[in-house]
Image (cartoon, rainbow, N blue to C red; front, side, top):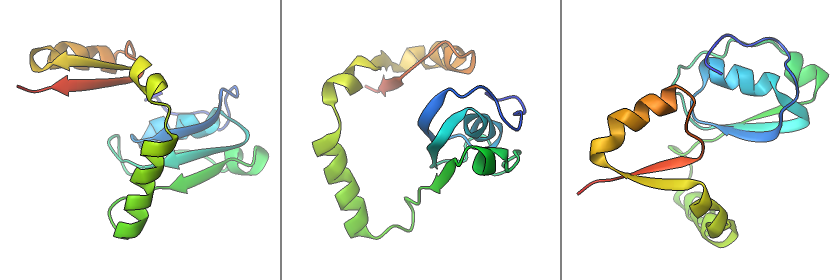
Length: 125
């Protein structure tokens, strides 16, 4: 996902949330199914978007920007309320693992190698 994207790739996802940007977002867009949508909420991999218009024109893919900095407080509170009410906590727990701080380097390498799926919570203290 971190390598340069093709204009279109095999359809893999109906939707996604991207916190990385750059090549990762470009690949996610290229692999999104017809009329799918991607929410972009981060720039960890860079602010560039090295892609083409192919996913948007040929598949009708939507790219939605998530603004968590300038969003009004009322909107943020509603978002947190919806997450608390609508999110399936059992599914979230099934894809979450907690590690101690002394395992961060090892798990960080696993994340970069694509060996980790879901969410890793680091317990400090």
